[in-house]
Image (tube, rainbow, N blue to C red; front, side):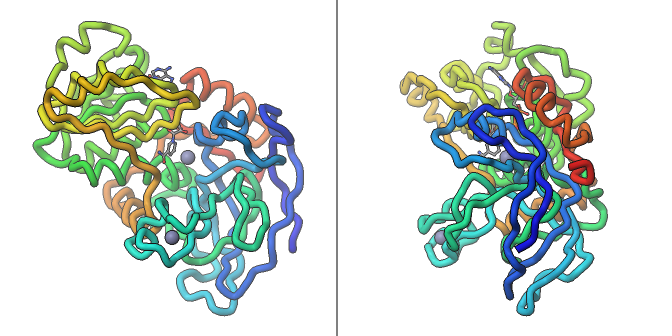
Length: 346
Ligand code: NAP
Ligand code: ZN
Ligand code: ZN
């Protein structure tokens, strides 16, 4: 065991404060990572607030981890000391179910282990990336290509894969029109990745406040959803709509923006249910789908794709003692476009 500095919430909705946690000994298949940067995902805030149900406290959030390998176990073959690596939302899975065998560890039916706010197969509580080191099984550690600086790579470990996986699955490609709802952490990576995949991208944001940024990120159109004209002018336009919104959305209105047999894929995880008139799906044979992060192999594929296309996150680098202010800003949609903690300041 080693003692490591971390930032933790002691109780639901409590501010995060500096503390220490214990990391396990490096086992034969483990990698010890010196964490350099940790992104702040809105999911961290949902969980600290117990917005998704009962959580485990103290909680050290953080599942957008970028760092450097400091030590490897005796049987490790995938990583070496000094490698630049990342860890996302999962640190283990059953490795035996059909989904694990297909590289869909995010949908493991045997129960995967989340990076924090979970109990692992040893019975220990997991603690996330707002800390200086972490020990993770080598199979749940991915390589960060040299072309990607670690600070802008960190958010790719959740925000990047969460939009890459559904955009690929639902066919974002040349000749397709894609809309991204919400220009936050996930949304801005959705715009970059959909554009890099060759699709024509529109941002649907609450206001036109961030229009210049959206166009620079790769969108060709940018509309305010507070303007009813948006829903008239864009009716029936899109092949795929990616919703990244952290609050309940009126999906009936957005389904009207799809072409016949088009799909909305939702990755937002609001704390309250949404209502839906099923007739919105019937006319036009439309799809309302969901998607959760991505598998380990696909996460590596996404990192390689981002390196090839020069795509990192747009970040605001903060010291650890600014994390509570950052949480407030994320909750008021005042993020451009991901806060990243410099873990040297913990
Ligand atoms: P974020 O940075 O806060 O971005 C969310 C964006 O949604 C905001 O920037 C805002 O964009 C828009 N928005 C917020 N409140 C809204 C409202 N009431 N009505 C309409 N639009 C609103 O959050 P994030 O980190 O990208 O995460 C987004 C959601 O995805 C969270 O619920 C998170 O838990 C979830 N998530 C899911 C997965 C998954 O695997 N499915 C993975 C990661 C995160 P505008 O200002 O442009 O309107
Ligand atoms: Zn996340
Ligand atoms: Zn499994």
